Amino acid sequence: MTEAIRCSIIRGGTSKGVYLKESDLPRDSDARDRAILEIFGSPDKRQINGLGGADPLTSKVCVVGPPPADRSDCHLTYTFGQVEIDEPYVDYHSLCGNLTAGVGAFAIWENMVRATDPVTEVRIYNTNLESLIIAEVPVTTDGRPMEKGDYTVPGVPGTGAQITLNMADTAGGATDRLLPTGNPIDRLTIPGFGEIEASLVDIGNAHVFIRAQDVGLTGTETAAEIDANTDLTALLERIRGAGAVAMGMLDDAAQSKAQSPATPLIAMIGPPQDYQNVLADAVVPAETVDFVSRLMFMQQMHKTYAGTSTVCTGVASKLPGTIVHEAARPEVQAREDVHIGHPAGVIVTEARVALIGNEYQVERATLGRTARRIMDGQVYLP
Image 1: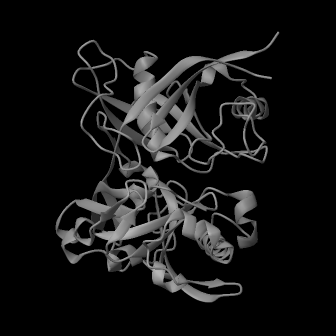
Image 2: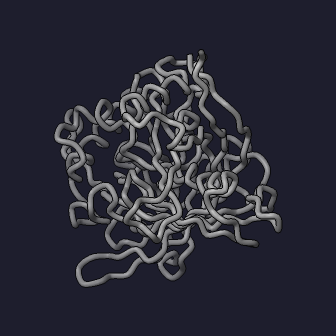
């Protein structure tokens, strides 16, 4: 008899994922991963035999379960998995901020959290980073997640109801420190290139920030331009690997793709400037952004901007001495909102940090997203 597993497909922000209940999956971790790979149709470049969309932004899984026994302050647990497309591997080292927006809505749809009109606070324990994420989910008067609204997410057609995520507690989730090396800038030695300055910051996910100009870019390039330059993408992967070693995430930079393909992420930062929004076929004026950034995710340039990267980049702009702080408009330091120019428009995050002793403490780090439930049903394993 063919095995069937309940699932939902939900678009969260600029990503789309398969949402599963922990109780519906095998308890053994290896068996669970085999089931997830079969659900997605991996390994296969087209994922033709499963639900995967043959793109890193749509090959993602969210496993939702009851709260940890020792965390009475949480409603549920959430484990994110980046499902490899052409390799038999599920990567649990990272977090997807976009799909986290869908977790709160999924929990309400599944009656895992009691809805409170007009906004339900869903307290999510993320197992990837062992951190608390608070999702503020608007709900209708009959207790269902609200999907219609006027909030715009660049890279997503139409509008929706805003879900606000506060990810301040994820600071240091991967490396134990917001600034893993204690420095706002480090010098990395890259084989075949030489030295390059980088800011290593860890909130949401660990990130490596470099100046776009240091690798011959402006920070306004399109995904097609970046991905077609194989020498550049290979260089960026070497830089990412060196950053991972400096943060203590890897022992060997050459193993970055094999051992941790999703994190740390690497971003190329530039000052405010006009650029072309290729999705909307319009110009993004320099005066609407505080700086520009281009992000690599899973060895490809992100077509929009990752949710965790939004949070990390915003916080980095508030840390004196970092490459992001250096590129940002000076006036951004006087306000909480940070406007990041990315390939599909402008994304806004709230960032507030305070210097406590010799360490910076993140007090607020938000991400505004929308989410839409696309389908509920059963997925049949081959």
